[in-house]
Image (tube, rainbow, N blue to C red; front, top):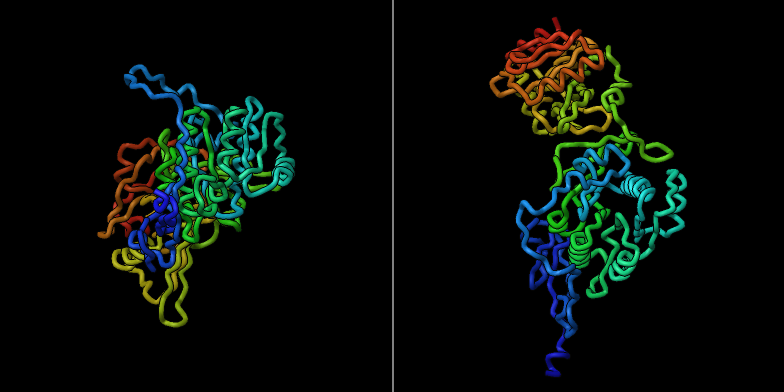
Length: 459
């Protein structure tokens, strides 16, 4: 028995990128193929001590589905309409939400503004594990956050956080950030795979048993994914990404996972000195600085969930000085651009082989829907031919490899937004125009092929 107690603790090697576990060290993770990411960590309870007990509530009882009350009317409004839109209409009791984003993008600013508004009606606990309470107070003054029931706690030990939360019973709990929280039941350092996984699991259990919605802020890696084990994203109910170009004041909040709502909705914000301001009409904002008489500029009615947004797509085609042509795309898939360049050469007769091509979505917006195909083709042709697309014209449609144009989803929302902002012409696939009624003042131009679209666009 004494030999069993005195034996050294067992350990595993965990990948810091994906959480893969191995009994021995490996130079390359077999799961995510990352190099030098396996870190030695002790197995909880293997050194003779007892592992921690999970946070649990009262014994669960089996309930009929019809006996469970719907939470549609129980959603709590955060006070920020754009955040509520992305969450699916508000905050669900007991929801466990992860907010990620690049450093300095505004994650802490967004969550502090939201919890500050929630604290006007009920107590809220903001756990700052990276800053002091004074630093958060100074930031709150700059953001004009003034709530008597907002409690700040500068703590990194998970057990002490639970102790304070159980005594306060807040309406919402915020952990900033999960990578700096540690559990005393584990001997590994804060931010390690086992610590992040264990702390997130216990926070999830606490949120479900107490019914208190919990937000955790997470760091991201170089490739833009949430730092820590991949299982972290599977644990939470909602994963929110706060993204944007540091060179632009606009920020986009996007849900990539949401158990209580759609994952297609986005929230648009503008970063100002006094904090984040909601943008209720992003189309006007993204088109405010557009030069209408510039070749290579096209407006597309993009669709984010149920929200149409008019954005400017720009293309620049120039002669390649060294023979090897470059293909650069920002805000849109590079492979999609290369495919459309080939379609333009083959089906429209434009010679682009010896030209550099640059495509950009203005304002830092990212487009990932096929409806942008026709806009890319029009912008490339406009720049190459040096012919301006008429200023109050917009285009959308999916292009096939045979040069045909295919219908896209929700065309009625796209043309309604275009008519509201005063556009007079819309180039769209014939399959969409067949069953559409044109709004007053907007002319619908139905086209069936890429060649026909370019001909009608510049006539």
